[in-house]
Length: 440
Image (cartoon, rainbow, N blue to C red):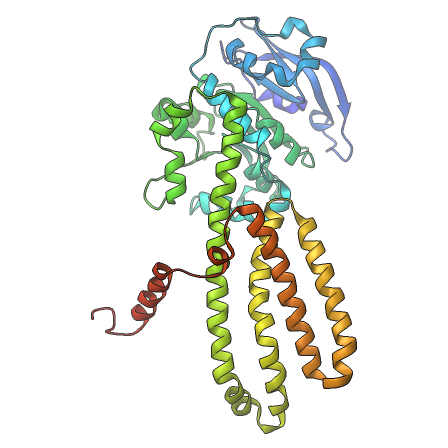
């Protein structure tokens, strides 16, 4: 926590100002000259000047939550509470209706390893889409932004890169991931709090946004009414986006079925995490298998087109002098088709932090390519090079396919062969492109 944040926070119980008690404070390198941003309070407490309530600062984040919610996250910070037992929640605090929500999203953010800044390009596109016509990402420069329900901090990251000062608030322990993702931004602040308790000074922010959050609240209308007063009255902007059932993918609809939530409610936390990972792996396998077989089908269809019309096209476009390129092109076609499968599968392994599989496949393919080139080029020239390329591309794709099939549980046929229904879809799309055909 930077000292600058103290000016924006208010006690969630009485809305009074806070007094800072810093237990551990470290200077920041390359921080702005303003002393409000020059150091990070890693451990401390915020004491309300009005009601006397005290809230801990743990791992650089103020935890402005009540005893029942604090008890749910205390086990993750045993060292802090061993050093500062006076800030520990009571052994048996009263229950809180938001306790399950906090624990569920904390597990999701901390135990399921959400993505980091390596996905900044996608994060930027996502924020741009959510802002719609209300504001451009570039216009965030020099703005003070509040992200309500910041999750793992992807929108904070983009806003900070654009030159904004940001405050992210989330009920869950995901603020720890958000802080890690934004450590390079000295003007980014994180708070763990329930925004319904209005833990911020009113009329302070240039932009207040909340994406995919309000519908998770017990009363979304109350949530909306809580965040609007936080924007400046003279030109402040509030942007809200919530899930819509229309256009929602089928698998995502399943995840929002209330009967499914009730069925899993009695299951222990670790079991839910394991179940979530298993279901995610199954859905991921279904998605990637579908992408693989359809990409391979389309590429193979284009390859057949090149096989039938490529020689004619080369002669027409480039003349008889380039007729010698026809054979190498035809010899390379199988490798080009297999390369499409290779490119899809490399993205699958990268998304699962299995880059080692890609490296091994690429290394073997490179060795085979170089070896075959040394043998075949002296004999057959450019045609030998084309054969070497086709063989090495195909080998790399087959290696990844074997690993994918073994890990996903899908058969080779499910991964590379389209079904009748998918072929029917292509036929319908093709008919739609022909005037009058769709009406038949």
